[in-house]
Image 1 (cartoon, rainbow, N blue to C red):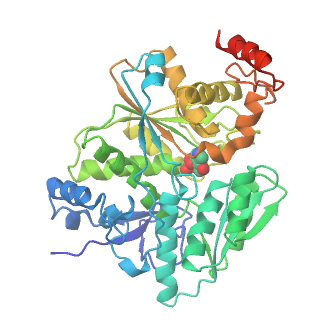
Image 2: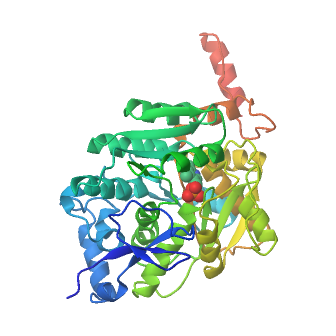
Length: 440
Ligand SMILES: *Cc1c(COP(=O)(O)O)cnc(C)c1O
């Protein structure tokens, strides 16, 4: 039997490169994609793959307990198990949003809580693959001194944690004053070199691309398709959680657009290998304040016109020049896709209305929910559709957003679902009066 294998292929030149090479673009500047030997993978039937993936869920055998590494042959087949750096990522809660679904008139609304992960966001899924590959390359003698990334907060938290677990130095470039306290303190705690630059994410991205021209600094942004490979596991895990049924609609928030590309690639691979035989619809939700993909969709995806991203509470998607634009457009075309934009008012209300039904939403999940609310209003989704919203981060990482909303201090937002604290003297009669006032 042929061994399972994967390599980089340049999206413009078509040339191939080993995954052990320090390279991010082909000779014509095209991004590299990880290409798998599908013929080798076809030696196992769809049924055999399903049984294997199922047998590994719930195992304690390294590294297969991880939701990512349980799909190892489809993501990074050539790596030795000892080189893998895993923090047991994946296998996140597929939350059945019963009351929120009822509120929207949907029979089946599910929220995939990808933020219930080691560092609190889906970025762990891609970072385990990238850092594992770096770990392997360093063992093979490739002179990589440190791994670097530009970040809107969650990528740097993930990079710092995985590097700390592996004993590899990490360097993170953050836009000064534009990320949450929780996001900032994570890489600090994990011992990364934290550089705060007086610019936005797009500015940080420019600097990190220049600095990583030096090959001893390995670039960890999602233009590096190793991250996409790990994030691909979301779609496979999702179908597995549904007993290999495909949902009708998936709504996902998008910034740099790596995650929607990964989601689509996971479905591509399941279709090619026969694990599923139908496609979901994939919808990207963007903040109206950072909406280059939305604007391009209005022009029939003619081309990307970068925008100056304005401030949004959904700070992880405050991106005006998304690196994975081409990847995302090809996925949207293949998956009958659409793009919605969501205002600050809509994202804040959607997140906090959802909280009232037992979720605890970060602003990015608010963006995805806000898009779904619009789709329901436009009847672009039907009552019987099985709908999945991808929640990308844990609400606990965004306490400032949630606190300000309930204190009615969010700029430009009217907090219609605010739940103000009742301040009361420690007097039984006054407490009773205040209580019944709120419960009436
Ligand atoms: C990174 C991130 C996104 C956007 O993912 P892209 O791959 O950049 O489109 C959305 N939400 C959260 C919380 C993130 O950290």
